[in-house]
Length: 233
Image (cartoon, rainbow, N blue to C red; front, side, top):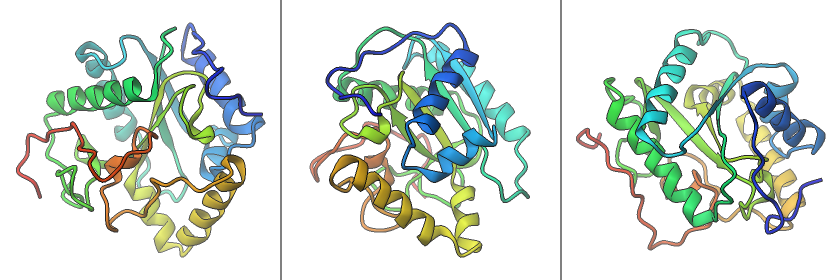
């Protein structure tokens, strides 16, 4: 079962193996609403790495190297999902606001170190409805998770960032399965939480997906703290 978000504390894990095992319990044993997350864990189609100093430039250097290696070994011809999860080894019990601040700080530091062009299929403007975060020339949908998230589906046992390639969602569309999978996940999430996630919206609709990254509910006045070094495409 999912624990009450106010009662959960961040656990420490010595290495990526322990973090992966804890995450597997959160996804599989707790019957997580995201079916794709369940699939990648059950098939072991994921890479989990653990870092210290969440939000720091030093962590960004290690994370960027690992993401570049992940992309170099990714089979872009396959229809299978394969995801990358960065977990952060800390005992700090982040509030939603603090987690959001560190999430964007970590993404900003990643961007500053990345020497590749922004993925031309998405916008680099975080206020744009077609925005998606780009790393090493590839667009990613970012999912922030931590014990004190107000969304039960994001109450991971430790602070974490899931990096999901946008190409995977496009493949689902090509297969004609995107809408069915999306609707099933949203229905399961609503059943778990009691109400639908107010931040959910399909890519390219009215609002930027940047609002969804941290998991915190934000209003129309919210401004993304991320600044791209590229002229907005």
